[in-house]
Image (cartoon, rainbow, N blue to C red; front, side, top):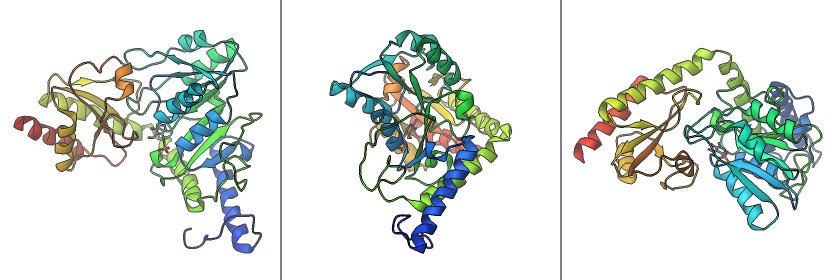
Length: 355
Ligand code: PLP
């Protein structure tokens, strides 16, 4: 597509531009069908999930609105809301989670006021992967205030969970291709019929006026393929179970080397690819460098918070940030193997025997 669809889509009216535009609309049709959505203009391609999340927050909230979120969110959510609150445009309530990292629908319900316009929260937060009861939360929200909208960040969940917007009942949803083995630099925002957003970026009027700027056609085409392949992969639950078994194996092996290692978050009801372990008494920076030198690529904190090994705010929110040591986030995937898990454990052993 980079070679064949070089033209700027649409507006110039010549053949190549029309072909590129058609490719985008065909792609949107594929994606909306997979999402079970009728109106394709409800699905806006963005440059990444951060872009979609910001659009769904800043494009929706108006002066005087109240929003609710949690302490488990990606910075794209928390900083977008904090920014509006700092400018005194909105007020924000952050709902606390259980020690295991779950949000109770009643706590959300109790935080709703007549001014609550929006709830923004992850289907499964990136740091500990706890699967939140989104459908129950939506039911609780609508029972208290039918005007309140729910925007779920399904970036981490999309590869593993059913993200049918109708079943979940959500009003807005964000996803990103690169968390589903697709290209980087392409995300999308779904919004239910009837929801109107103000653009947060103005320009040439692409994406129904909501996300101006020349579209990244090859990435959009790749996005559709990504969603298609993920839907196919999810049809067989064994695919997920296999990753989960490998994750559990990795944790058991870590515990053999570090008997006082602790799992952050629960053993169940979390994304199968997410392992977050506390290794007491080690310095996170030197530990991560040592693992990396052995070819093991894991992180502490949030990989998405650029170049920061600071203690993740999510770990702090689970009450586990008090002791010194490293909170190691190990992300597995469909290409991970037992050998990878063994390599992680032997690299850990090597470093720990030296220190
Ligand atoms: N939300 C969650 C839960 C994420 O894990 C990430 C990135 O890892 C994002 C949002 C931001 O995604 P992007 O990097 O596509 O902007």
